[in-house]
Image (cartoon, rainbow over all chains, first blue to last red; front, side, top):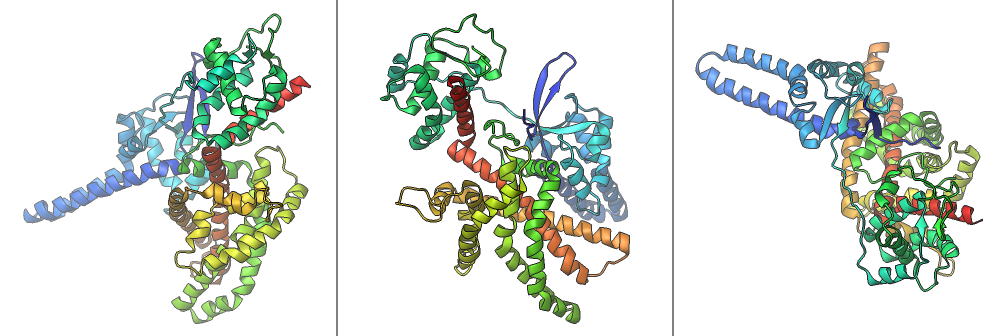
Amino acid sequence: MVAHLDDAILIVTPENIGFQYRVAGPFLRLPAYALDLLIRLGVVLVALLVVRLAFGAAGLAGLGWGLVAILVFGLSWFYGGVFEAFWNGQTPGKRIVGIRVLTVDGRPINAMQAVLRNLLRAIDCQPGPFYLVGLVSASANARFQRLGDLACGTMVVVEQRRAWFGLVRSRDPAVLKAAEQLPAGVEVSRTLGRTLAAYVQRCETLSPARRQEIAHHLAQPLRARLGVPATIRDDLLLRALYHRAFIAQGQDERALRQGSPFKPAASPPVGVLAGPTGDVA
Amino acid sequence: MQLDHTRIAIRERSLLNLYDMALRVVATHGGALLAAWACGVLPALLLNRWLLGAALEEVVLSDEADATFSYVIGLLYLVIWELPLATAPITLYLGQAMFDQRPRPRVLLGQFLRAVPQLVWYQVLWRPLWFLLPFGFLYPFVARAYLNEVILLERNPLWSRGGKTMTTRARAAGLHAFMWGELFLQWVMVLILGSLLFFSVLGSAYLLRGELLGEWGFDRTLLEILLPVSLWLVIGYFCVVRFLAYLDLRIRREGWELELLVRAEADRLKRHLA
């Protein structure tokens, strides 16, 4: 099995429940960081304006500048930490961009982790303001953790809404007619089922010529196995087989796509299309 | 080769996601990518040193801002011109590494040599001509953003035989058609992030040199070594980004991930039938 390079990581809880997260790397975090920087700058500018107008007029300019200095210090060191502690791992920038800080085992971070990972940003941004330490450390691990994250056992994940398409019911008469021409009792293997499901979900976004080109690869061996007439186009054959297996015969496509284990048939029925491992649905 | 077992997970990604994935690719294939980078970039570095030797001497001797500006602009022109050939080894390596556990240097060299005529024709001879037109400089970066990948990885012929085979030119036109707006925005993003990254790398190198050796000047070493090496390092990284963006474009436009899945399943069925 070839190892995948991916930004998706699987976390298994002590209750043996698996969650898949997509981790956010330095470049995905950059817009959130820029937004937070803008917000901090905005707050400082407003404070400066207030000091100049209100404190200056009252003859308390010195006190005003002192308060601004405290504000700048507080924003620089604790803006991220305080927001992440109270907003469940998010700053305003992170909330807008749709990312969140979690612990490496998928739980919400606590206040200590929130503050510490933000304080350690001072090391991550070295040398100078160039952030090369953070960039290199984030590149070197699969969770894109900078030093602050490594020290606190945290990571930044993308909040995503996964769309579930469900079964695709074709209304195309040509597909329905082609499905009727397929042999009775046809069942598909797990891998073929996944491939057909992916094809049917995706083919509407492709041009007819491209669909035909892709479908041709699989249609050849399918024709040889099923004895399908040549009058049925390659694209139509794949969609008809999907319709026949999952709509007309009610084979569980969702289970196929999730890769659930299946009970192998005692003796393969007529027209079963099994892979080399014989993983018959 | 198992077509649905790629070493980089194939799916649609956002542009920033591609930049992050490129970091992972660089970290995972660091040694091999550095070797591929050196194969392409070292000749370019030496050529630029030779071509800009006189301009560099002028900068060192006169210490004038104009001379420095001319040197930097000259360097940028040369780098833009050399970029497709210099980054070809990285693209070829990544193309192999997508499926093979260990790409073989001899295979990569053979692929590179076969692609040289087209690279020279399109990228060395034709490409500079676009810079003579108003806004023509955008054409290679926007309208033919992935021409290098098409030449190196898809290996279409330069000329059509009997009008039936897809040429590189036709393939590149089809791949980039109706995508110019998006590709222009991507190019703007590359400029912004590339500049940030370049100044980050150069600034870090400058600070480290200053702290370790006590040399803080705007001197010969900075212009002759740190500046071009930083530039080429960032270009090398963006070559990895461009490769991933090319895959992403093929996934979105042509259902490439679907084709890999379908072909892998067809192979399984054929083996089963045999």
